[in-house]
Structures are given as structure tokens and as C-alpha cells.
Image (cartoon, rainbow, N blue to C red; front, side):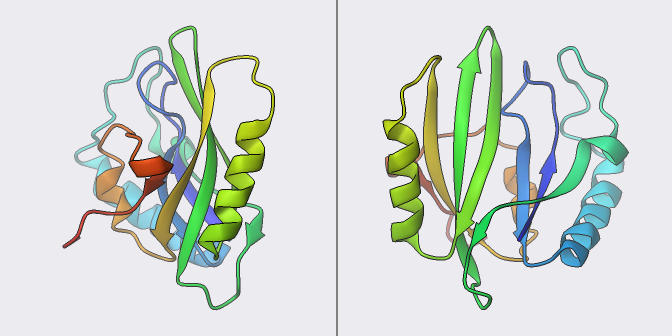
Length: 154
């Protein structure tokens, strides 16, 4: 599995911003090209604190530890969020095709001793779906129990 993410200033928003999860690198790279082409004309993150945006380097694909069945069409992404000294950061830990497995990983991560303010979330996503490009415009929000899914009708 591969993630498509966009790096932004840690003083502006959760960094990096999630744009999608893809079954292979080719699909993630195709989505990257679509996102860059669509965003060049009207970049919602053109104004950032302490950072000049550069879509070519800010939008990237990255492999992620996967515990998914090959035929999975919906996955659960486990992430760690940290806040400190005015910065907000996000680390993508792994992706699961079973919600129970994702929640178990989140509980194990959450049980670890914390040095700074952080929390773990589990978010639901459809594989190879670019509709999350629109959600990248919105600030991250915690949802019921940290489980996020797209609004109906999108």
C-alpha cells in the first residue's frame, strides 16, 4: 500500500496532509499527477507559515506498513498526532483491512508512555479513491472515538 500525502508547514496545519491510500505505487503516482495539475491553478495551501509551497516536492507518495488483504477496498489508517511548541505533526503508522486490528494497534500505541501531547487516531478510507483531495482542504478534526469516514454523498 502507498499513501499520497502533501507536506505543509507544521505551523499551519497537520503535517503531512493525507490525500489518499493506493494499492500500488503506479496508482499513487497517477493520483499525485492529477492532484498537482488540479492544484497548481488554485492551491488552498498557497499561504503557509514559514514555508513557501512547492507542489513538485511537497506532494509525495510513500509506502506504508500494510496489514491488508490484497482484495481490500476499504482500509483503516492508524496515525499518531503530536502537538508541541506551536507545531502539529502527524505520522502514519500502518494500514489495516480489518477495523478490529486497527483499533488494537491504536490501543497498543495509546498505552505507551507519552513524553509530549499526542494521540492516536483510526481513520477509514476507500482504496484508490481521489475524493479525499477535497477533504485535504479542511483542518483535521477528531471524530467519534477517532474513527473518521467521509460524509455521505461524497
